[in-house]
Image 1 (tube, rainbow, N blue to C red):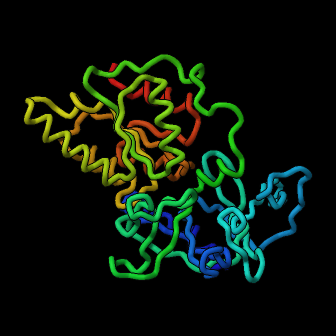
Image 2 (spheres, rainbow, N blue to C red; image 1 turned 90 degrees about the vertical axis):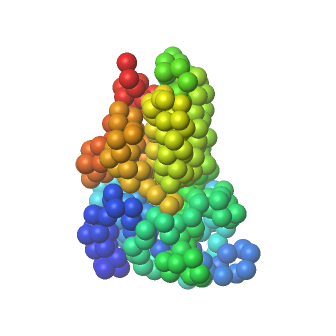
Image 3 (cartoon, rainbow, N blue to C red; image 1 turned 90 degrees about the horizontal axis):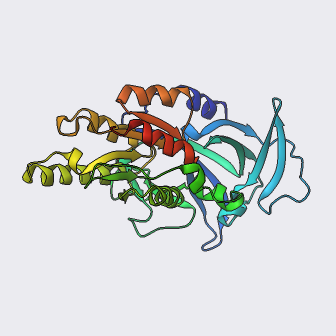
Length: 319
């Protein structure tokens, strides 16, 4: 356990190299085949790993809530992750993963922690693109590092899990808070990239309210390929990409190519000079904000507050 915790603290320097650390854990036997499969969460979401402490049940809590714990003076809700994904622990809920996600702190109870593996985002495939889409799985990681490897891990969609367990009160995209329509250059659109179905749905709602034309893709690689295609099309018409795209809005954690790498590619390519990029991510904190500045992004917004995103878009759009 100490070795795993040390890895979390020491191995966060990979951001921006299209590599990342995936924490692997098990939740128990699944309901389909009775097997104990590997699941994963990005190390950047993990604040701490601790042996399961004493939990205080809360009266009237939601079905997946185990209660709360007092961790060094902070009261943290604890969620039953095996129950959420439909698994049954064989040896009990032994480990608690304390996570920081989208401006919130919560803990997930799991059966066991296996390892931390270093992966290239190219080893991670979109669950939707690979035909393995599930409501709570955003992507599939090939742990063996090649296309023939049989060791796989399901990367959980924490956004979808938290929305399912604790649905937001009211409309998360309030037109009154989002504000008036965006004034984009005629003929241009917003290119947005996010691998989470929940996040894409919220972004789409906001852009529709802002009356901004947009295209939505599921990975940094898809966004990069689309930008290159638009650059070719613009050149053939005697135009530039800025006549096609007003803004790129990108998540950080995405299969094939992460948002840091996408941003760096854009900012280092003369064809895209002057194209604003906003990073919109559940990964918050000063370390990530430093990396955002290092790759040249024009803005950084922590998910998901609709008015904050709208304000950030307005700040970076050409006047």
